[in-house]
Image (cartoon, rainbow, N blue to C red):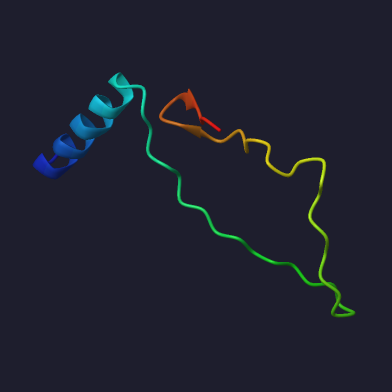
Length: 61
């Protein structure tokens, strides 16, 4: 493990000890139907946590 990695892990650990977390990078991809009509978002799942895990802990919403 190099020094930069140790620094980054120490920062991450300090944030976790404070109850804070780093945001996961996100991006929005808009899918389009063959007819050219945009696909509507799934309203039932909108705003729900994605459930991805980061370093063994459940991602926070």
